[in-house]
Amino acid sequence: MCVAACLAVAPASAFEIFGLKLFEDQSEEDAAAVIADPQPYTVVVTVNATGAVESAVRNASALVADQNEPASGAAGLLAKARGDYRRIVAALYNEGYYGGTASIRVGGVEAANLAPDVNLPDPVDVAIVVDPGPQFRFNSVNIVNQALPTSDPYDYVEPPVHAGFGAGEIAKSSVILRAEQLALEAWRQQGYAKAVIVTRDVVADHATTTVDVTITVNPGPKAAFGAVTVSGTETLDPEFVRRQTGLTEGEEYDPDELALAQKRLDRLEVFRAARLEAGDAVGADGLLPYNLIVQELPGRRFGVGATYSTIDGLGVEAFHLWRNLFGQAERLRLDARVASIAYPIDTAEFDYFFGGTFTKPGIFTPDTDLVAAVSAERTIYPTFTETSASGRVGLTHILSDQITIEGGAQFELSRFDDDFGTRDFKTVGLYAGATLDFRDDSVDPTEGWYGQVNLEPFYELNYGNAGAKLTVEGRTYFGFGEDDPFVLAGRLKAGALLGPDLSEIPPDKLFFAGGGGSVRGYGFKSIGVDDGSGIITGGRYLLEASLEARVKVTQDIGVVGFVDGGYVAADVFPALTDLRVGAGVGVRYYTGLGPIRADFAIPLNKRPGDPDYALYVGIGQSF
Image (tube, rainbow, N blue to C red; front, side):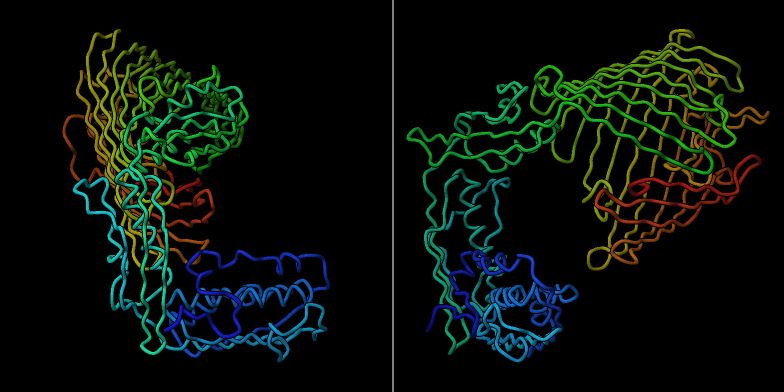
């Protein structure tokens, strides 16, 4: 029997592997980083195995990863080679191979035997030869002081056996480390904040190719949250920052509450960094104090952007954001936009928007924000022109990472020019909405679903009419293949409006369809209701659907095929012959901020006045 032996000529030990100190000593590679004559090299890898083992060795080797770039002299090359011994040990241990041998020969000589100042050919041949030996499996696995199972679903932690930590399973080093993490997490979820691994015994028997593992846990005392002190604030109120964590002194320790506190701090958008550090020990009173260390962001931020489509023209926009206006992370954002810029330039055809939004976080709870907004705009749509000023004030509450609700009051003063003539409206009302976002990514989702519902009851003062508008939208995503290179996405949106005659309802309350976020290939809000006499208005009912197939051709480039459909109805849904359908193709360039989108669409059943095609450019998937 022997403690899990490392590979031949490799300078790392098994305790370095399981103690997560694989690359702790990087002095050789750091020393080789000084300026030196470039040392080009060619590398050949031979692994006496195929499949996962061969891939693991190749992926672990820095010599292989950097072979297209010359090393920093002979010393840099040898430092990289010596580091590869450790990396290959780790890779083989992670695949369950504890008795292999490895050789890294530089110019025909074992790298471990060469001096850093050796003269090497230019380029020099590097040969990596690895014999992984037999694969080991777990014989006995034992966790001393393992937490008892809990009936609370929020505190449930996957048992280590479900992660491959069981007799007969492949003895991967990563499985052992994962078992330790799960053993600690199980205690911490039950309130034992200072649970630690006391000992870790890993013994490999080369005669039987088995591994015995004993992990001993010390859970420590049960803890509750103690006082939270705040340091690093400059203009922020420390008491407000502490309150925004939502941590209550005396409440049982829960790592989920810590994670939620971190998210609450991040949502404030005022910190460059915010970190909660636990005290060294649980006090005699059972409380564990915390220190919240923060670094504030600058008080101001601004940005610019642009959009373009062949139908709606160019749009430019800018914003200015003030953070922490009064010491409690209040935000004021001003937005301005000029759109529908086309050639030849005609300012009379431009759309204008200016607005401001004030947000006061933590108004009642750490998860509730007060939001007030005012705006003024003049927008020319295909079917009407709007000149208006509006405002709203309400609350937004985050129930969870996936669910947000909002509600409040709003008003609007507006003038509309359309086929009914020029009409003025004064509207007051309420709004309420809920968003459920269970997608894996909000910018480039590959699986999950998204739902949103909005209700707006209102009263129009000039005509003395009451009404209510309801909109429901759902999206779903299905990814296929490794890393989801193929994604099928679907979207369905429906709306209904109860109220008086269409001529007495503000057009912006009615439903229209068409445009980049609706039915591509048609002008924005160009699909409405034709009363038979040539008058085009919005409708009481809306139904839209989109289907999109997304394919990643390379890591950075993707192609898309899509079809959109939708129609608007006055009082009853029209026949399917009135359904407007657009179809097209697109390309995606994937960046760290999300995919850059370009879509080309044509209307399949165009009407007089509809464009022959449309091009849309933006950031993020279309839905």
